[in-house]
Amino acid sequence: MLVIFTSDPFYPKYICFPDGSVPCKFQKNPKWWPFFKDAIGAIDGSHIHVTPKAIECPVYFNRKGFVSQNCLFACDFDLNFMYMLTGWEGSATDAHVYEDACSFNFYTPAGKYFLGDTGYPLHPGLLVPYQSVHYHLAEWGCTNAR
Image (tube, rainbow, N blue to C red; front, side, top):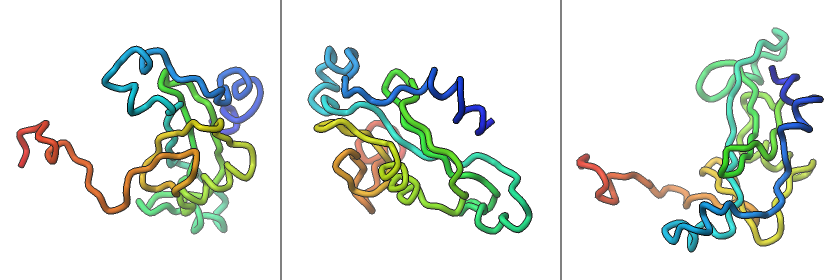
């Protein structure tokens, strides 16, 4: 499946690099616009099960204990893929895979950013939460959990 997703005709047809435009649904919604006016999408990694050669298995074990590839995906807010990078062994961190993508061909238009999780580094084109801060609904009073 990974070979299919990263080669012709799938990749050029369904993967569109970011152009810097912000979706209209954010521009028209005052609840979201002040906060996401320069956000163009979200980025995250995913571990996909693989079966490498026996000699390569140790490096493909991820922190969750199974053999996988760590893949990087970026999508816009309409859930269209903007970028994907596959092939990294499961033991590779999200930050390492992101740095490789940036050095290869992943870019963020000037003044725009992607949303990421705490596994990604601080970077001009990437907005990540503060380290060691717990963002939970219970802290905001949105649930009955205490």
